Image (tube, rainbow, N blue to C red):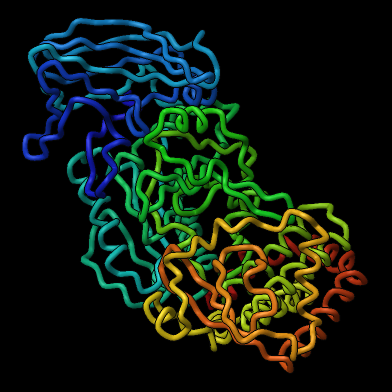
Length: 582
C-alpha cells in the first residue's frame, strides 16, 4: 500500500525547498527530476520525508519501503534525522534504474523522521517514487469532503478541478471520495459532475456552511469520514490521498482520531501558520507558528510539537461518528466553531509534516469587525469548557476593551462590547437567533475605510513602510502597561495633535499615547485606517465597559451554568434544521 507518493513540484512559486534540495532540477514537460552529473538531491524536505513516528504510533506500521522509479545509475542513502537534529545514514544502496529499499521502523527513536538522498556520478533521472507498506487497510474508508463557500467562485472551481482531475487520473478514487460544496451565497455555477454535489444554503456563515456539509456526509450513509476544507485554499490532490491512507490504516485504539493538515501561508509559501492550535480559556495560540518549513530543524520541531487542542477547518478530517456521538458544530456563524468542536470531539489529533494546504495568512485577514465574533464566541467556549474565575474573564474583557480605547479605535471597542453583551444573554441568544446574516450585516456596517501607505504618508507625513511597528517592544513592566491605560481618563486638553502609528495586531503602544490621531497599520497588507480622538464617544464607551465588567463579575457563574446545561440544545440537529429552514 502506498503511504506517500513523492512530490517534486507544484504551481505555487518559491516552494522548491519543500520538495527537494541540492543538485537537481524538475523537468515539468518530461515529468522527471534530473539529478545533475556529480550532483546530489536531498529529499529530507517537508513533502517527501517519511514521518515514521505517526505511522508506527497510530497505524501499527512496522516496516516501510522506499520505491524509486529512475533511469541511470545513482547512489541512494537512506537517512534518519533525530530529535537532537543529528543525521544518521541507515543504508547505502547502488541503484541502476528502479530502486527498492526496506527499513524496519520498530526500533527507531521517537521524534525523528526518515528521508533519502540521491547522488549521481554521471547524471540520472527520477520519474517518481513512494514510501510504501505491506500493510492492508484496516478500514474501508470513504471520505465526504465538505467545502463551505460564499462568493469565492474562482477558488472553488479550482479546487473542484483538482479533485476531478485527481479522480479522473486514478479512477479507483471515485469510490473513495465525494465533495459536497455548500454555497451560502447561491451564486456558484459549475458543471455537473459525479465527483461533487453543490448544495444551496442560506448564509449561515462558515459554521452553518460546514454544518450543512457535515449533515450531507452523515446522511449519505456509507461515508466513514468527513474532510472539512476551506474554499480558498490551494492543495495537491496527494494531500487527500495521504489523509485517506492514514485513516484507512488507523488501529482500533486510534480509529476515532482527527487528521489535520498544516496551514502554510500563501503569501510566504514556505512559512507555516500553524500545526494545530491551543486554547487555555483566555488565549488562543498557534502551534509552531511562523516556522520556515524549508529548514530541517523546523521539521524536527514539527515531529516533536506539543499536543494541539483543535485543528483548523481549512483541512480537517474527522470520523462521521462524531456527528452521532457529539452532535453538530455550535451555531457561531464564524470564528471559534472549529475550536469548540475540537475541544468537544477530538481526543486525538494527528498533524505532522507532509500534509498541508496553502491559505491566506492570518495577518492578511485583519478585520476589526471580527472582534465581535472572536470575543463573543471565545467567551462562550471559555464558559463551556474552562474553570476560569469570573474575575479572570471580567479582567480579560476590561483589558481588551481598554486596549482598543487607548488606540482610539472606537469602532473595534464597540464590537468587543457588543460581543460580550450578546454573550451575557447566554443560550437564549443563540437559540433565538434565526437570521444571523442580518446580524452580520449590522456588525460589518460602519467599518473604517482603509487607505494605503502612500496616502498615509501624503496626509499625515508618516511613512509607515519605514516603521517596523510590530517589532516595537511591548511594555513588559505591568505598572508601565497599566499607566498607558490611564490615557482613557486623561483630560482632552492633554492630547497632542501629532499623529501616532501602531501595527493593528500589536499590543497597546507608547507611540499612540496621548495622540489625537492614531493610524492602525497592517504591515502585511500595507494598508491602515485612521482613528481620531473623540472625548464624548470615549466617555460613553467607558461607561459601557464598566457596566459589562460588573455584569461579568456578578453573573458569570449563572451564564456559564446556562451555556453548559443548554449546549446540546444549541448544537442539536433540530436547532440546525430550524436555521436551515427545514
